[in-house]
Image 1: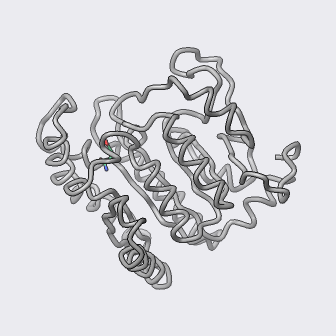
Image 2: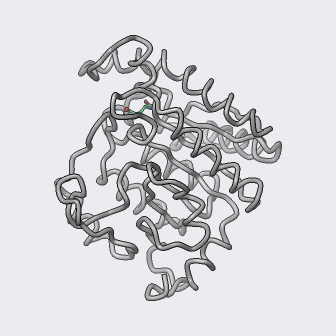
Length: 275
Ligand code: GLU
């Protein structure tokens, strides 16, 4: 099967984990979900020999929880303050869970502008590559104290696309709280159908034109489709999965037809009808 073939060829993957996945209904960090995602990342590393780079949101949500804020503030400076408080909490959670699996993690805080600065871009790339050689998982977030692009729009979707290109990943997996790209918002209509494969961005862009983010996340499907368009233009496959569903990553790597897969633009490597 073509899906099997695709996943067998994946050796390096960027996994972006969104705020809505990491938080529960009461907007607190959902430790059982994080634990399960960590378990699946370990499956990829240990059983599939895949190199994994994590791009994670959740700093603002974690900070709000610690500061006792129930409502996400409007002011950017307060969001930055929450991110500052929450980032170390977020890393403590990842550090503890991966350590239990015998894996070290390294924190990298990036801003989008470094991707236009050759020296800094190369420094970031070298650090990530060295961490991977040391079998350390790079855990990346936007440096929210100095840049606010992803706070305003994106929830790290675009940042993760830039990272996937930077490290020449084979795949960008965007973990969110819906099953993939649907022609109708699944939060409005429960029987909406997920589009399993996208190779034409004009349709995808039409669908997300008026979509708005929900919950604590600031990305929504629009920035996910933008991220997918960016990476597929660089020859990288993009997959959107629902991280609230058990074993979503493992199932995808076993060839199950879940989520939405975006195949590289103009690619002749994949037969659409078989995916
Ligand atoms: N970098 C932010 C975070 O980790 C982005 C997500 C957001 O805007 O809520 O919390």
